Image (cartoon, rainbow, N blue to C red; front, side, top):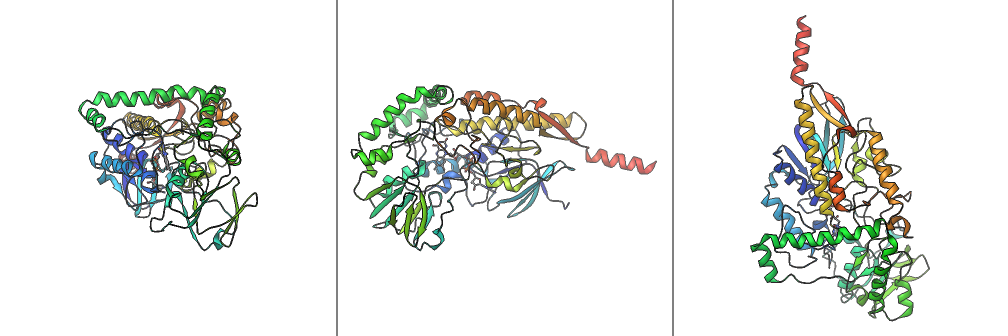
Length: 509
Ligand SMILES: Cc1cc2nc3c(=O)[nH]c(=O)nc-3n(C[C@H](O)[C@H](O)[C@H](O)COP(=O)(O)OP(=O)(O)OC[C@H]3O[C@@H](n4cnc5c(N)ncnc54)[C@H](O)[C@@H]3O)c2cc1C
């Protein structure tokens, strides 16, 4: 193999996951690493999603790094531009820029079983790394369904994550496809501007009020001057969500009360019984992600809005045809149809020890050990891997827990290497992966995601929930605190200098 630049760790992606990894590596004294990013700036989700109304739906003081608190969050649920600016600041404050390689999409990464390292081919060149960390994000590759006739549509088409800010929506006949988290933020923003808005809704969402408000100047000053007040705020936001978890994972019947509140939230605004019927879900609240909005229902009752309670089936010329036969002629189609979650594109590009890609290894469903490592893919870790998603709290808590695991993994590798027998790598034992996933799936049986009577993006093509963590974030943190070597096979490559010494000694004999 040709000699390439070698680094200890190569991280793919510069969203919360990749930047967080970079900070934690530096703090652990590891500076020999790169962050490979396909685009030309950091931010991931928060760089790509710039649609009108884009904001987090977990309060900002919890939806941010514990090691980079921001006393200046402007709102409970801050907007995309503030979150993006925060991540840019993290990159500067923690001196991450020299490590980041922009325009370096990872095209292929192959495990070299002889040298025990990854060969990583990027758009800007090839390098090798002892450890490969994929932080490409669960929601970073937009998914547009294969709709017959869409190619022949002559109007404007774009996905919510690829908003075309040059396209003027004023007065246009616009269709929004989908009623998920992005769509319900977009709809109230564009409704007053467009001529006619047709919303194609396959499944209605449960929508709860959004407790949003400006964070006052006094609060911000207080948080800056007295950091414990900020920490307390975060702690409260966290603990409330930890207490909610049991209802999702063990006692879905308890969610009945929440369902009543959500119904009241809708019926207060939506008076038309036909529209109410369309907007009333027939599954338990929480089965799909609970959405938060105070402006969604008020937008839907406006005279220029039609809700088609059926998915988009085909496009004929400039007419959209729903599965129930409803037709709408439009000038623009905005897809709020989500992302490739259970079929992450990066999995096709990672090739493990026996020449199998991660996508092939996961063809019957994604699975990893502690949401992080996969058998046959030594020294490889996925941030926000299988069964690490959350229904109700901040993904940053999961990311930070996994980064503890990463740092401990590298520490274990160091210890094994200095123990003498040459450079080491760790490969998750298939039986450990099996046992972990059997436990996760056993717990999944009781959860609202399984019993709630819906089909959500949490489930893969086989109907298995490979995305959500069926426990609290505190528990996830505990189970990822340390790498348990009993769950791994230790692979070794003899030290090069020793090998050479042995060869020389052999030749001399
Ligand atoms: C609109 C929206 C709102 C959200 N709101 C919340 C919220 O309120 N609370 C919450 O907890 N979560 C929320 N999420 C989930 C969110 O995805 C995570 O919280 C978090 O941002 C994920 O960070 P990440 O770094 O793992 O992935 P991302 O932010 O998606 O970053 C992945 C990065 O990897 C890069 N990349 C991908 N493939 C390659 C490749 N082959 N080579 C090189 N680079 C590559 C991408 O360009 C991107 O920069 C939201 C998601 C969206 C889309």
